[in-house]
Length: 192
Image (cartoon, rainbow, N blue to C red; front, side, top):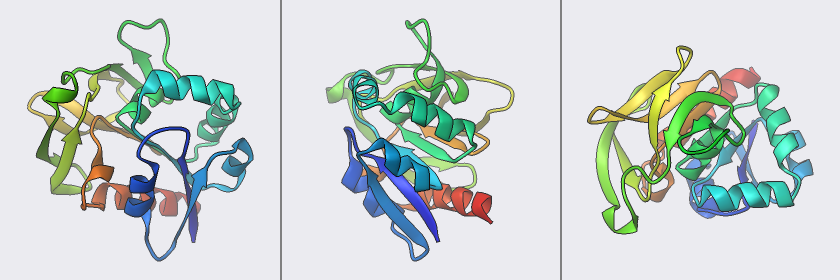
């Protein structure tokens, strides 16, 4: 049994919980810092990254999240969660949690009205993963230890560095749970 949390400060928390449900998975909606202590993995949902960072600071999550990552515990960030995980953000002096060696650009795919859905090949996950892009960031570049998992055209939209996953899109807004189950398998493998 693995215990995976979904950071519940903002964003599509319930949708991530639904995608993570599996026989050997206990899911925790994380609203308090001390809940991080018992987790084997953590999802950082989409939302608005600047607001999420303010809430992370307001509720004292910043250092505990950095410690969680430093302990090597798996993290999966979607959309704004990916921005929080990036080492560099275009137009900012520094990243937020900076756990993946990548540079991102906010809202790279346009505003809300430019939202779209498409099917993507995601390495290790599937050939036809449904991806929902809503004010999505773009992964501009990655370090040499970062594996590119998916591209939309020539643009990087999903990446992995060790136990850390990030994607520009919202897999939680579809009925396809394979990306989340891929994350669960990373958590299970580490716990063995």
